[in-house]
Amino acid sequence: MLELKAVESGYGETQILHGLSLVSQKGKVLAVLGRNGAGKSTTLKTIMGLLPLKAGEIEFDGKPIGAKTFNVANGGIAYVPETRDIFPSLTVRENLEISAKNFGRSGSEWNMDRVLELFPRLDERMSNSGSQLSGGEQQMLAIGRSLLMNPRLLILDEPTEGLAPIIVKLIHDKLQELKTAGLSMIIVEQNFGFATSLADNVAVVSKGQVVWTGNAAEIRAANEVQNKWLGI
Ligand SMILES: Nc1ncnc2c1ncn2[C@@H]1O[C@H](COP(=O)(O)OP(=O)(O)OP(=O)(O)O)[C@@H](O)[C@H]1O
Image 1: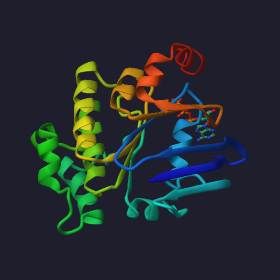
Image 2 (image 1 turned 45 degrees about the horizontal axis):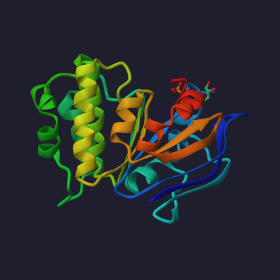
Image 3 (image 1 turned 30 degrees about the horizontal axis):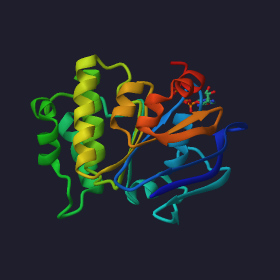
């Protein structure tokens, strides 16, 4: 469904991705793993058009993805950044409404009610501003907002970062529900257990290239891969 072919990208003059190639399949969860600074977030930002593609190709459903972030999002890819980027001065309801208004289509699969059913906690916080939410609630809001875009592919950058174990478990269960419902996902994670229990497939990134691919069971059994590329 999404294919990166020999992608080169970076920040200004600094090249970070050096011919990175990977494939994410429809209906599957791909975990992208790697040490700090390997280029995982850079990969996601390049997919989303937040960093320029210097060389290589990115195809979504067999067609070039387009260079502008709005077009990538409109084409069906929702992105939850590491920073979550919710609007701190707007209420939970307003944060959700902006997404529903910009991307909601009549008869579409995701609407406000379904998001609140998935995250009842958000329903209790509808009148609170973004800045009043806990880290876990912010992550729920960021995911809920992205679902209102009715994506065909959901991309998450370190969804568990800074969250308490009980919230990590909750986010895990919700993403598992979305997976069961057939949503395709790419998840960048430092939490190996979280990532490999959700993932079908795994790509390991080091120094801006994919150095290992396989399925989740394979990497769980491959201690030397974990040790060499992830420092586990
Ligand atoms: N805004 C930036 N300007 C310049 N260099 C950057 C910028 N953001 C990241 N980098 C550099 O790009 C490299 C890859 O960073 P990236 O954020 O993609 O790593 P990562 O694999 O996602 O790791 P992490 O888990 O630390 O986020 C690092 O060397 C980092 O210092």
